[in-house]
Length: 124
Image (cartoon, rainbow, N blue to C red):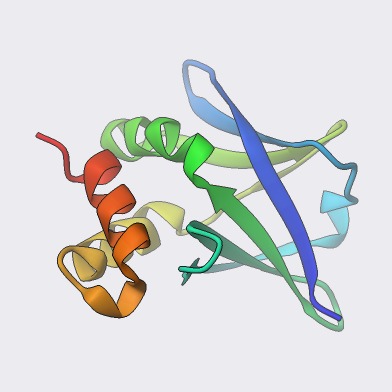
């Protein structure tokens, strides 16, 4: 069974964007995979992390996109936090920039995903 973690709340500090999970998860058991994919059905970006046996899908829903855009623009670190554990989401800036470029006007990602991603990340 696929393991997932939802990061629904954001807190911007001077040098990092902290994305909080509502459920407690042992982030110290995870290793960042450095990859970001899209779940068009859930209208979310999904960061991949690894355990020794499996991938864990870390969901980044629309509720944190505005803060992610600011973190991308300012090139500050983005971290997942659960309880007192944290995980730096390595390579997320490059992956997010790449996906946004590919999503723009691309109906393969689904109309809703394209529209929402463009409105947050490509707004002038």
